[in-house]
Image (cartoon, rainbow, N blue to C red):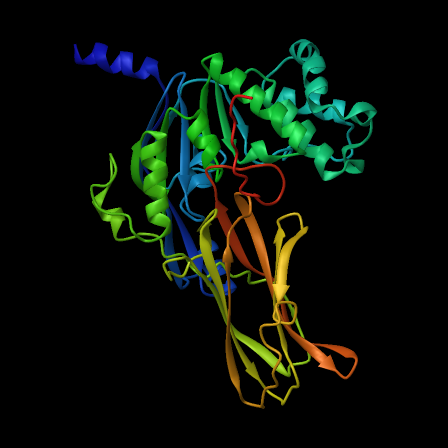
Length: 427
């Protein structure tokens, strides 16, 4: 009886993740990495657990979501499921052909045309030329990039590139579809087409594993949701249960027993994100002032780089002045990951500070506002500037220095939400 029960469970299970651990060595110095690689002695390193004893069962025909803060292990578990990465320990069993929307176009040859890359990728996925011939019209129609399909991929815009890559990946009729934030590619019309295809897959009974910061999509499409935090599985349950738990994690208020399937060891790891600082940020200025400290806090005063859409947050700056200045200007801007400036302000525009400062003086500056941006990833740039007579001066600038994540359960069109109040009534 037990054998029959286990066989039935195997037949009904599309993906089984059992006690998976993924550990990385973080070396203090490059020479330590080299010594370790060539067996020349033990280099100095720290162990980082990207995943720590994670267990997941995904049933055939089920749509499951994986949510969590940046660095929680979401993309790592998907790469292990698809075979891109191997676990340090533990087992992963996959029952069915996978199509993974992870790193779109990773296998494309830039010298080949779009059509040639379709055949290249199809062959790599195990299809015969005849099978690709049959799928080609649907792929080209879905990508909708016109005669560019006959041009070398290296001539494509980034938008055309991801459209073709997405079209190839989603039109190979997989049994299991793995999606990592890929439904946000292209313009709003192409995104709509992607979501229609996603719904079509769901109606056909395909197995779907879906990672996204867009909680509205998680709530709409998923049957169950797994919540990860710092490499540990906190819980699994309905979309509503896990989204509510995730919101508690974001503000450091996740309580033991608050969610089905919670692991007690993970509760002490409630979200207290690192600074989210970009180590490769562009920095320049004449040195008359220096931004010595910068961070974000949420509406509860907790330091974080992950914010709930619509909540109030504060940007904090600590600035030290090396010289006497007439009227320094403190500023910040917000860009999306494509480099488009979304919004920003400064103390001169706001008429918030028009005074002079003395050499050695330190000012603490706060900008408080609502996070009405759409859910997604953003980059904050900071600056201290001013005027010497009529000449504009840059004392210190930090470009793209903070990575800010906005988590939303309702995304509207465009960059920000107008928070419209809607009334529908009989005429």
